[in-house]
Length: 160
Image 1 (cartoon, rainbow, N blue to C red):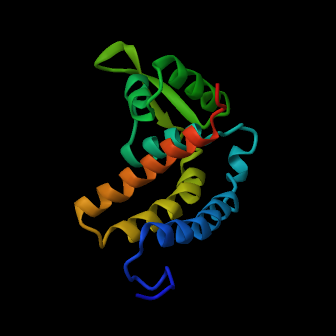
Image 2: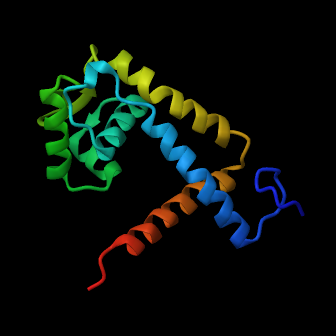
């Protein structure tokens, strides 16, 4: 077994942790070097806004409740996020033709090229990285990243 974590050999838990501790700052740095496009400069975007825009970009228009469910937030929280983006002209809300009480949210046509150019390359890179894996391996990657986020949140939470 090689000590080089990038050569594809097996890693014990400590070697994997070391490799990820080196890799995570690179991933975070890359994300930070990808600023929002100028067209979105006046909009205060947080991580959940990015997730919301990603869902709309890749899955198309959807209801506020559907977005809330995917974002794992309350519908009122999703509505507030949508209102932020709507004020900036980034998203639009339209009446659902099947149920006039519901609103369908979509990316504004004028904002679509900027959002595609901004979020598209990261999606393409993830697709390239995940494509060779089996469905079970992809699930393992996603589940592992979720588990890391939960554990990191517990570690950084103030102790009472």
